Length: 467
Image (cartoon, rainbow, N blue to C red):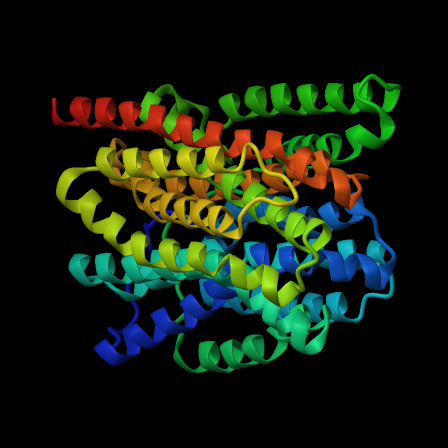
């Protein structure tokens, strides 16, 4: 997501043209969100096909999300400078080629590398496509409706990923998880050439290369420690050195950003408790979602013997709940502010996590489905108020940057959730798997409690703004 300052407006699009632009951009957004979660349910099949262990499978997911999170803001700045349609189409091409490389990967190392390249392409789609939509729709009311559709598509893509992945793996094997992207990318490239206008920012932000490098090092090394720590040992010299790298990169990032006129992430934004709370809430919600998806996948397929399709279908109530509650949450935010939907989100996430803290190999499937339903409701209610809290107390000129930071926080949460959940089940046999997941369900509940605390910060922020 980028700032909404734009170059002199191109010739106005017709109503049909504007909504066609939205459809093309939503198609790309659906791909980005889907690839964040669609692979989860296919991980056991990937492991069998490539002879990969749990940690290799964690990297298969996190190579994508870490790169995506690390490059989101810089990709938006590049698009503002060199043209949004140009960068958008470049992102589609990179994403498509990388998807083909994923599908043809001969080893888990090759798959992880291709997934990282996929993340590069995805980072050029998510923020840039939204900037294209904002630029194409000058009317505030129409723009608000378009952004509502955009948010619903993103939530839908994340939620239906496991169901879609299960069906693809069952019908065509795990490589189809990536082959399926190719025709969609081809259609999006053709439509974007025909319907999407070019636009640039009148005053594009400068690229912050030092900040970008330090952010990437801190995120990638931090996630790497969580994934590899159980294997190398938390007190080993390698783990200690990696922790020092994370600390040094984080401190260096804060120092560099505080001294730049146009930082990648402005530290001053975090002086507001509401904004800081929103960023932490975004991380927490996506930690909860991805912890749920990974633990559920391994438990159902390894401990209970479910097929990928059966495991994916088990998440259908979560997908439906998230899809239904996301637009409802937006309406609640518009009418009552962010606090009520945040309370609902935190309450349902907490309840869903607590349902499974005593999970064993014979736990009723009804209880598992109920827990997934509750977590889906919580996820559906969470995104709109988090975004509103992040941007609500800031000047309009900084809203785009705030939105980009929360998008980065969501992807970071996805990576952390996979790393933390994978660390719990790595090397665990089917008989012990259920017990090994129990701390993960406590983590999901804890994330819900954090969102409940965020509701208080959101209310305080609203009160200050009114005052």
